[in-house]
Image (cartoon, rainbow, N blue to C red; front, side):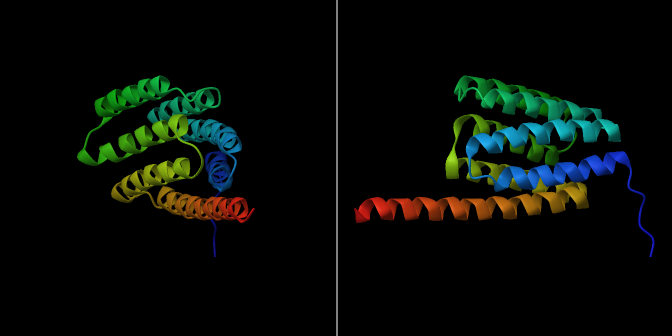
Length: 175
C-alpha cells in the first residue's frame, strides 16, 4: 500500500480541518470567534500555498470580518460586509451554483456579527449547508467531508448548549 506524499499545503489544510472542529466545538462565543480568526488565517495560508488567489482573498475577508466581530456587534458593519460579499461574489460567479458560497458567506457574516449562543450556531449551520451544497456540486471530496464534520460538531454543540440552558432554567424554576 502506498500513501500520497504529504506536502506543506496539504499539511496546512489538515491544520485548518482541526481548527474548524475546535472552532465549532466551542460553547463560548468569544473563544469560537478567536479560533475562527486563526482558522481563517490558516485557510488563507493554505489557499496561498495551493495558488488559489480568489480563495486567499475570501479567507482574508473572512479574517477581517471575524476580527471586527470580536470588537463589535454592529449590524451596519455586517451589512457592509454582506454588500461587499454579494458584489464581489456576483462579479466572480460563472454559474448558478456559485450562489451557494456567496449565500454561505453572507449568512456567516450576519451570524458572526448579529447572533450569539444557540442562534449563532444555527446561523453557522445554515451557512455550512450552503457550503456543503457548493462542495458537492463542484465535486470537492475533502471539503465535503470537512463541512459534514463541522455540521455534526455544530449540531452537537447546539445540543449541549440547549441542555445547559434547559438545566439552568429548571434550576431557576425549582428555587
